[in-house]
Image (cartoon, rainbow, N blue to C red; front, side):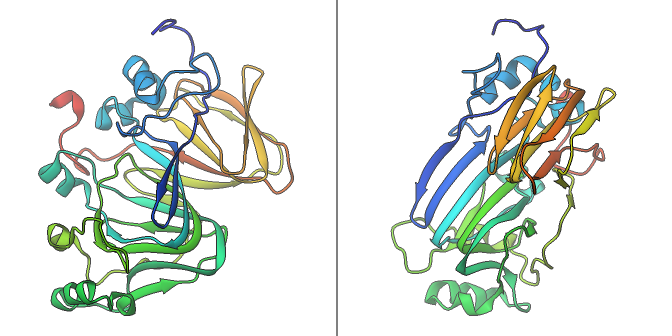
Length: 312
């Protein structure tokens, strides 16, 4: 890649839309192999996120992310447009995913972009259930009666930890998650022909758990998400900040301005600010603009997957 020593700039990426039986998945930014988002603005236009990571490493993500995740961009952002009912899933934790599949687990945040008249989120169980009763309910189709059902509203966010069963209906979601699509399908309602992973995932289930309720801000080992009501221009001056910043525009429109260049985003769009871009502005271009800011904070030495990359 040319210009390896040239200063990085904020980046936007082309979406990748995939059809599902229940709606669509639109990957906004993902480094997953089968999805490799391509930059569409700036001097790195035409390069994929994996190519950019291979060349610029910690200059993109910061030392903390590079230490733990190596050359893979550590989070993904996608939009789920659920017209019917998505299949019932469970995600593994990092330790189990690393030991069994040599992969990252999946902690995820669901931000409700829009909720239809029949919108529902299935998040854990109404009350603790036995393994046998859940297994049988998945097989005979009665599992919905066991599930904790939430009537979501636009603007709410729900943290889905590993082990929590989850599904959605008649809703549009922005999902922020670890850079992993390792999940297990437990039940697919009245659809046939897709693989069910019930036995494979059975010991991963939290049979007592449910998502406690919506939250505005989230801090996990894998990512931190803050909500910004952008009423006036904000200047970010970071002194050798050790993290990338991702901005997801959820309402209105805004620009990330760096070196007097605007990287515009409207609702649903994403801008990546590399770790080495330490001085920039966030500028609203509509009233009522709201952003989600995603970052990776320093983490304990023993909190995930395995040993850091540089100790392997």
